[in-house]
Length: 463
Image (cartoon, rainbow, N blue to C red; front, side, top):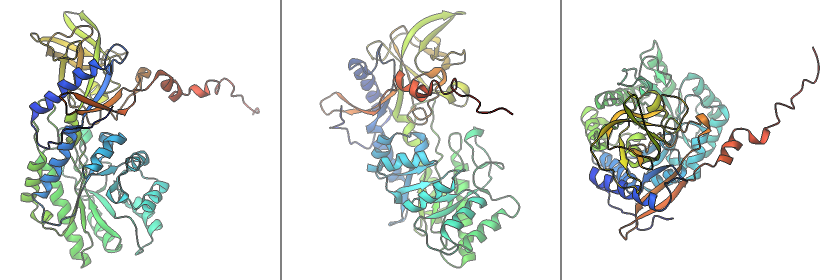
């Protein structure tokens, strides 16, 4: 499999995206990537990913002064797959990592240290040492972490990594509390409205010439553009205050996080990166005048639209007058949707047994997953063309967080993930992104090599 002849068009609409998806589902069935022996698969639209990366870069280039250093660091947690990170790196993006594992993924993908940012609320001493040795940018989350950096760097000493502090402007939550990180009691960053906190941040910078970055991230899904812009404005104002107090250009880079929401209810691509960049230019004019380098950390808004989880309908049944399609996609790939469906609904597309869009008058039905509990539903009471045994149900907009949040309940195997693009001859080319997990690998991951470990454990003495 390969992606030679991939479409390089960087502008598109929802219809183009739907057309590529429909072609990919049909081709996956024809080639056996989907079927009785492969009842669930993840598909990634390479053309769409490239287009989103280009749109992001264009949006900020349109409002920033010429020569402004802008790093768009993809939030690895959204889609922690090495080939995806490599694709984005080739498209000019970096990586924002939140663990040693994500840092290792970024390095495996070839993302340069200079284009990598390490943000995490619980960085260990060894992790900080590794980041500094590599030259990866680090944003300290709290005073204790800053003291660890003091010990590693030395007050006033040189640092090979760009170093900063994450602050929390404490401006409130969006519509989803779990993804709102600028609340009064958020676990992230230094709360600027806490007594004495703002002054502590200012002094921390003025006493450490090697602190040069200021970081804030208001939240992600469910955060309105106005709240995102307000968080950036408050971060910018703090940077100006620090530089004025220091009497020098102490803060030279602002990391404004990500947070752009995705409309999971439709194909509408709003809000767009361009809308957000223009709003920031209006609300915080000094942000783009060239005095500050900029870092963004978008994740969901870059990848969500370009991923699809497709699952075979194993059985179609009725219960209590309700149609139920029992599929192979449920809580193991969509835990947020299953456990909090009101906040994380997914659109479902119906395909027939040959992978073609299903026709027929919509009927109300549930789309259930394979896990052994009654709440394992991808969609409940959804009007869709009747799903029959052997058909396929596709969970749309699952390119972010759904491939990286596998839940091993019932020891369900992780599905394979494949990238796709037009092959240049009217067909579809596929490339393996992640091999499907085998049952043998499930056993190995669950301690199969240590089956006798507990039965042979004996007390060596008595008390």
